[in-house]
Length: 568
Image 1 (cartoon, rainbow, N blue to C red):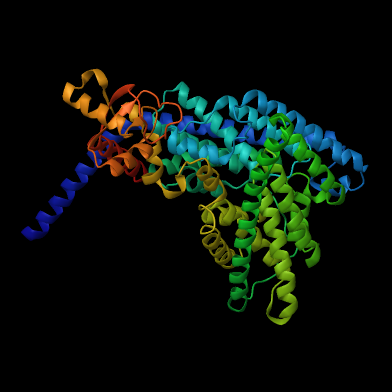
Image 2: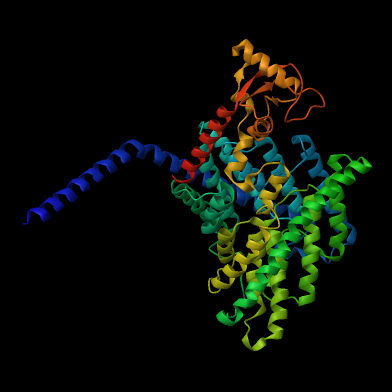
């Protein structure tokens, strides 16, 4: 054998032995802990799956009891036969109980949902509030059971996050581990709710964790599969929606129409989101203007919903029956357009009235109706080159939902899994991409991230923005008793000139003070004097000194940690 070949073979054998040795070392030292983590992920997936299933079946049972309907999947047809006063009374009583629960168990009478889970992943080391989360789940449960016009995915996701937070606290998990467990819980909850394991796993990473770290993928998939199995043990291997008239897509000819539909769906999604925020703003103004107790606000929203339901019972609950009608082409264009407007108003009243629930199911219904209306018009103009209107309903369902959630990948997949129709993937992808691109420029990326932005949590801009608010000044400053006399005198002078920051403030408030003053060290006050500007105040309650270089180093460490986690 030639020396060069022999040398090359020996080198390859040596590299192989080294790789085997390294693999065995990893398996020996990390294998047990990794297996333990995956086992915890599986258990969380099972618990979250059963939680989602119980939540869904509980709503079905209570809804059937309250409305007296034998099959709540066709609730709006049954509600149309009920006395009008019952349709009004039920949501009012439901809203009253919801208001009392939120008033008693939350500080701000606000229902927790997906946006709070995103906040927990970004800023709270993978934890969410337990007490407020359980109260919110109860409130959303009652809202959906008594005529509220919202969805069940928001409360289910947060309830699953409460489960993972409890486990993370018990095992004293660090931020990375807790976030992975949070992703597992969310994936299992979504999968169990919609029988959609692929979309459930991707939803957790795309929407909640907001990264696709390889290390987190395996446990999240395990949890998603566990949640799906739990759903199928109860409901069987069936899709959420059955399409009776799928039709065929004339790919190249119809694609421009799906591009236009995507843009229209993007506008509809923005109108839906802005309507919710506008309704919430109006609710606050009315509440303050008439002195309405906050616990009565959901009851007021329930009254409005009840009055709407007298003429439009389609708004009650998640709207399953109306969505099926749209997907099967059971409505005319004028009906579809009218129901889009009515459902949008009903969702805005429900969410603005602080009643609870999520936005995913309503966005599916509104999207299906929008797509059907567009499809009926488009196919009537060019019938010889068009597929069926239900193709457009199918596509519109995904386009509006993707724009609202800001999750084009997982929403595209979840629509496929909800319907079991994989034949028109190109059309769905085109419409989803257009709607998401348009809507993301008119809001802060998504409904959830816009909610956080309105609470001054800048998660939409990425870690370079929200990490500033997670680092507190008090943890970085040098205590006042350790300062020398010259520095203390300098700091006291800066305080008199209005250059200071509060110890409880974050780097988001501190860094602009450095920029404005041009100083490399600024005083930190124990508290701000009454009436002072939060970014700087006069006073002598010196807490310590904050150095610019310390802030930049802490910020840099936080950015490095995030980058390391996202690329594991």
